[in-house]
Image 1 (cartoon, helix red, strand yellow):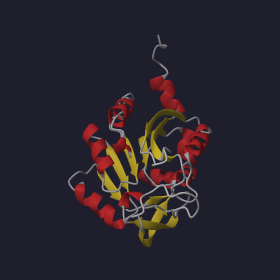
Image 2: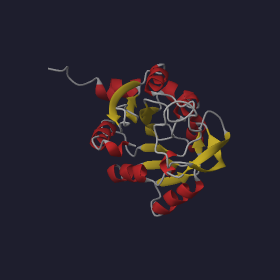
Image 3: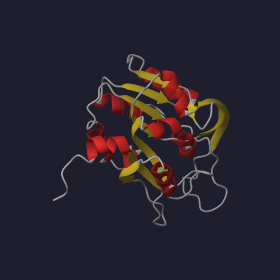
Image 4: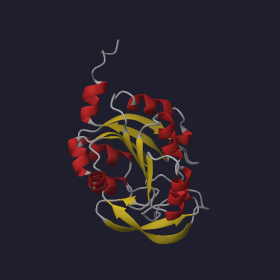
Length: 237
């Protein structure tokens, strides 16, 4: 996520602390080795964190990393529109593994060394199903670092989005295609706007050699969260 823009950390923590509810529940989708989960645990030690990582080797890393923390649950699981299975393209750079293939047309905006090592079947579930099965009535943050699966995940979260169950969404976005069929920033803004979720902040990532911004991260907030905790402040001077 936003290692390239470290200003995201205090801004995200400040936003999450605007809601007085505690303990909070977080979903870290695309947990990789658990660095973002560790960030959340450090800021909110009493929070429940569901760390979802489809790669079985990485999920085991997360499980071992937080084995002594009962508030962190690691799940070897991909989120998508429906329950079932999915094919995970495991890359040499595990942070770029994806359910989607790399694009076959246009310039290559990723390093040439990042090749696919294997394609494996992984269990998959919709976000609505996962939330219902956990009995979670409120999600303070949904973090998506899912390498192009964002729209499929959102299509599987209609109940959570319509009800405003998720206060904030922190997601990676692409400005230029890195995976076949992956949404770009405008697509995410348009889909989330249909549920009243508004863009709160942007964090730019790396640029390509031609000057093109490649990707970054964005925070969206639910209409309920905005009304209760953001739009209650005084007007700008």
